Each structure stands twice: as structure tokens, then as C-alpha cells.
Length: 310
Image (cartoon, rainbow, N blue to C red; front, side, top):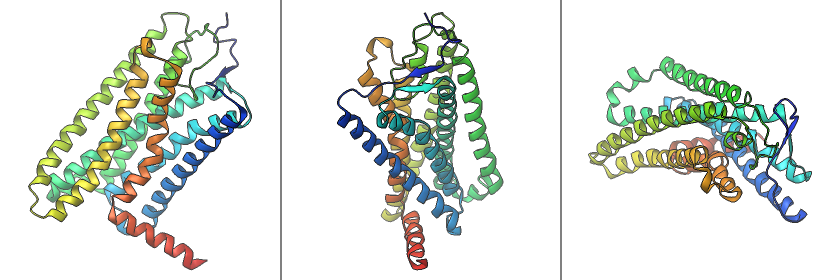
């Protein structure tokens, strides 16, 4: 029986089938990865370039795009490389690094989504106090708190997970190093510490989610009182995509980390992991750019300017 001190690498979930299917998986993940990089990169460039977008909402959106690039870059490239080279291996250190960045970036992303719901609440329900409550210094402090929260969560979960004795082999049934799959390799009750830490984390996430739901209830009540149909449409256009992204992210992540082992299976685990780790970073730019007229206009200016320089 192996233990954690003798494990030098882990074996990730293989994509069964012929070599053609492995290459198909590589091409599919490559297309999604490039789309996420392009979309989030354009959002970051546009917001940084257009001074009209230097507002709290777009500042937090820029930070969200940065976390999206980090999230998908932490998990997808290694999976693509393994499919391309017909391999399953990831080093022990590489696995620990993956766990750290997954928790850091996901915690930062959820914190930013919570802050963005507060930003929309203040903008729509308390517009006269917007500059006071969300000044530039306050926004910077909020972003710093979101990233600090991510680093703290990552340190706690990574240290806790990789201090466990592992004696059930080194096979991780996921395309990246996911903590619930690593806990299955533990050979003592010490894994309960990490399990309780995951439960506490889920409670904090649920609390933030309740805060977002309450914020949106207040927002929708205020929006329905707007006499202008155009004003109502603009408010819903900025809020509904945010709510959709949050709902997908939260439900998939909580289900992945807290689902009973009795209903766990590699295909189900794979689908859920893709839903919370691959889909949001890829669709976030699409949702925000298509539903936001200001961002679309600024993006058109950036693209037009690039072509004119050429």
C-alpha cells in the first residue's frame, strides 16, 4: 500500500476510446480554451483601453475576466497535454499547485460575483449614494479582499488535503486534481478535517448566495417600478446574465464537492466538473459582451482601431 510520502505522481482520469477520440477531446478542449482566452482577453483589453468603462462595474468585470483566464488555465491545458501525448500522469507537486490555484481562483471569482451583485444593488436601488458607497478606493479594497480571500482558502485547503496520509493508490478519477477525488485515496479518518472544511466553505458560499438572491430581489422590485421600458430592459440586461452565471457556478460546485459518494460515478463527476470549471470561464465573456451595449460599443472601437493601425 502506498502512502503520501511515497507518491511521486497521480494518474488523472483517462478519456477512454481510440486515439481519434483522444485527439477529438484535445481539439474540443483547445477550442473552448482559446475561446475563453480570446473572450476574456478582449474584455480586459477593452475595459483597460476605454476610459468610459473605468467604473466600478467594469473594474470588477475586469477582475472577473482575470480569474476566468486563471481558472481555465489551471485545469484545461494539462488535460489537453495528457490527451495529446496519451498520458495520465501529473506530478505530486503539480497536483498540489492545481489544488491551490483552483481554490484561490474559484474563491476569488465567487467573492467578485458577490461584490458585483452589491454593485448592481447600489447602482439601481441607491443611485444617489453610488459614488459614496463605491468610490475608487473602496472598489480597490473590495478587489483586494476578494483575492486575499482566495489565497487564504487555497492555503487552508491545500495544506489540509496534502497533509493527509494517502494509501489507496494514486488514481484521481477526474481530469484535474479535484479535492473530493483525492480524499477518496485517504486511509484514515483524518480526511474528515478537510471534509468539515469543505462543509464550512459551502456554508459561506451559501451565505453569499443568499446575500446575492436578496440583493436581486430588491433590484427586481426597483426595476419593476421604472416607468421607462427601455430602463427596465437595460437593468434586466445587466442583472440576469450575472444571476445565471452565479446559479450555474454555485450549484455545480457545491454538488461536486458535497454530493454523497453513493451517487458518484466518473461520467457524472466529469460532467459536473466541466460545468463549474470549464463552462463559466468560456461563456462569461459571451454573456457579458452580448447583453451589454456599452461594452459592445467599446469593443467595436478597439477592434476597429486595431484594423486601422494595420
